Image 1: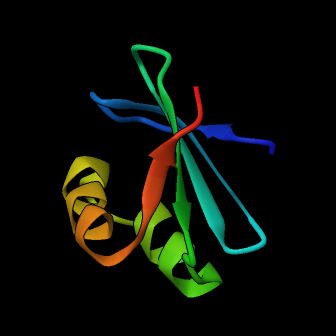
Image 2: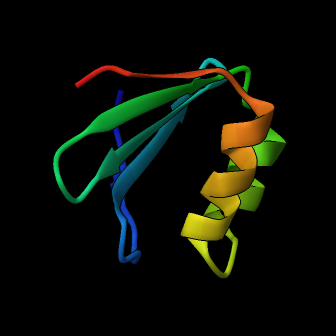
Length: 67
Protein backbone atom coordinates (compact mmCIF):
# COMPACT_ATOMS: atom_id res chain seq x y z
CA UNK A 1 0.00 0.00 0.00
CA UNK A 2 1.28 3.47 -0.83
CA UNK A 3 1.50 5.77 2.16
CA UNK A 4 2.00 9.50 2.21
CA UNK A 5 4.10 11.35 4.78
CA UNK A 6 2.21 13.31 7.44
CA UNK A 7 3.14 16.01 9.91
CA UNK A 8 2.69 14.35 13.29
CA UNK A 9 4.77 13.77 16.39
CA UNK A 10 3.75 10.06 16.48
CA UNK A 11 2.84 9.12 12.92
CA UNK A 12 5.25 9.01 9.99
CA UNK A 13 2.95 8.07 7.08
CA UNK A 14 -0.63 7.07 6.30
CA UNK A 15 -2.25 5.11 3.48
CA UNK A 16 -5.74 3.90 2.65
CA UNK A 17 -6.89 1.19 0.24
CA UNK A 18 -9.95 -1.10 0.11
CA UNK A 19 -11.24 0.13 3.50
CA UNK A 20 -7.91 -0.54 5.23
CA UNK A 21 -6.13 2.40 6.84
CA UNK A 22 -2.40 1.76 7.24
CA UNK A 23 -0.39 3.84 9.69
CA UNK A 24 3.38 3.85 10.06
CA UNK A 25 4.78 5.28 13.28
CA UNK A 26 8.11 7.02 13.67
CA UNK A 27 9.48 3.94 15.46
CA UNK A 28 8.86 1.85 12.30
CA UNK A 29 5.79 -0.02 13.54
CA UNK A 30 3.02 -0.38 10.96
CA UNK A 31 -0.63 -1.04 11.84
CA UNK A 32 -3.64 -1.84 9.67
CA UNK A 33 -7.05 -0.54 10.76
CA UNK A 34 -9.92 -2.45 9.15
CA UNK A 35 -13.32 -1.36 7.80
CA UNK A 36 -12.32 2.31 7.64
CA UNK A 37 -14.49 4.11 5.09
CA UNK A 38 -13.10 6.59 2.60
CA UNK A 39 -14.92 9.39 4.44
CA UNK A 40 -13.30 8.35 7.74
CA UNK A 41 -9.92 8.36 6.00
CA UNK A 42 -10.51 11.87 4.62
CA UNK A 43 -11.66 13.09 8.04
CA UNK A 44 -8.58 11.52 9.62
CA UNK A 45 -6.21 13.17 7.15
CA UNK A 46 -7.87 16.57 7.66
CA UNK A 47 -7.86 16.37 11.47
CA UNK A 48 -5.98 18.97 13.47
CA UNK A 49 -4.41 16.22 15.58
CA UNK A 50 -3.78 12.84 13.98
CA UNK A 51 -2.88 11.37 17.36
CA UNK A 52 -6.27 12.35 18.78
CA UNK A 53 -8.10 10.97 15.75
CA UNK A 54 -6.11 7.75 16.01
CA UNK A 55 -7.29 7.29 19.60
CA UNK A 56 -10.87 7.44 18.28
CA UNK A 57 -10.13 4.90 15.52
CA UNK A 58 -8.62 2.56 18.14
CA UNK A 59 -12.06 2.32 19.75
CA UNK A 60 -14.09 1.97 16.53
CA UNK A 61 -12.06 -0.39 14.36
CA UNK A 62 -10.21 -3.68 14.61
CA UNK A 63 -6.50 -3.27 14.04
CA UNK A 64 -3.34 -5.30 14.03
CA UNK A 65 0.36 -4.72 13.86
CA UNK A 66 1.73 -5.84 10.50
CA UNK A 67 5.35 -4.73 10.96
